[in-house]
Image (tube, rainbow, N blue to C red; front, side, top):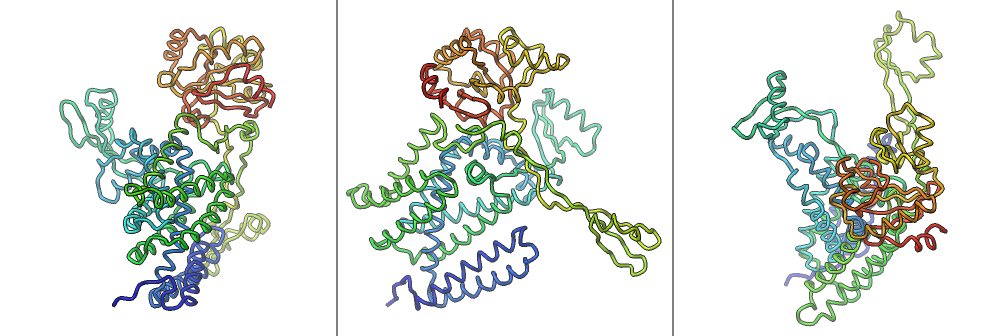
Length: 583
């Protein structure tokens, strides 16, 4: 008779020891691979891989796979829940990141390169980016819940492995992308279009551009392009940048996924041994989940994560007991978690993220964030060849500058200078993507009469452009309405917006509309809605960073965001005076 697998295996003491050594070995490999520990790379990796190898062998010999898998379930499950919730908090932002990957020169170039398929493209997925974003968020949360409660482990193990293989490939692509590399690409153009005609002409003059095929309607062009590298994988959306000050670097994101993939492999290898949780196991996993979710909530400075995460776990367990014939199973757990996640996603899509991690969140100081960047620190080293010994010698900038003997061409041959980055530069949190401007020739009467515009023109009458970037954060109080695209925006509450504009005008409070739409669309919008509001242009990417709602309203006082309102929650002017202007 086959012996039933237990957590202790052949020895509780040895298997606990092997699990601890395995985790320590994994940590050593990760630490040794980071830039800060490059001098100890060999030492950390040797220790790490030895510990992983010995402990893994011990876990198999002493039948400790189940124990290791259970530890992995708790850690991976909690991280899946938090990662999914953080992305579900801002599915539109995650969709923007997916769109970056779907661009032809981004992720698709790897397929073109690896499989020799220059015509391959992922751009057809761009219209489905939001749907994919929502699906990925919910699946990630579901897998996390099922890992913790021990439901449908075989399915969960396979799906988790597939998901981590995909994410690891994605972060490997991000970490290893070389923006200077060239790859062969095929693009299809309408033969009679302006671009198509231009490419035909270019192919005649440039040997690197070739016509692959041509019909009466279409033309396929082959040319060499540089990859479009994505510098931030978006693993935790804007949450990490907004909470700890920066996102994970591409290399850190890759190692994070490698660790998760490694742990998921243990779950996959033990899937036949894992059974649904007992009551005692549920208590243990609930306790460990509270601890892990609480720690992650501290990292992301958002305690909703532990609250909603525990609600989902308890709801999944409750339905197992109280769901009756139809829902008292893992289908019921799946259903209740899915419904709760859909409700959360639906709310943030209709309004704004529950937790705003972006630079324009309520309470943020915009002026300070415009100037919080700094230049990096670099050190030059000089490499010379000693003509007497023939050896290459390296000297610092100070050593080279202070030692005249090194300049003697009879003794040394100068080889090259290398610049080493000691401390990386940091761009300001709010960069030039927030840059409201308008050409002087496009200013109409309401825009010219704004005091801030008058001051800018008086200060620099020769400038052909009026830029409000600095002026906005200096105003005592200003109301901004942002609309990425005037035609696509939801203007059901435009009557309230117009009323606020009229009251602001009466009280001498500047009121602006920022958009990326063309001047023709702006004029059409004004005429259609009888709304001659001051309108300035801004880059669409910058408007996306300000608000997900289209349109949205923001109140700023001396550079500090005092209130943000999606188009479904535009308040009255009296409400603003009582609740926002006095804050």
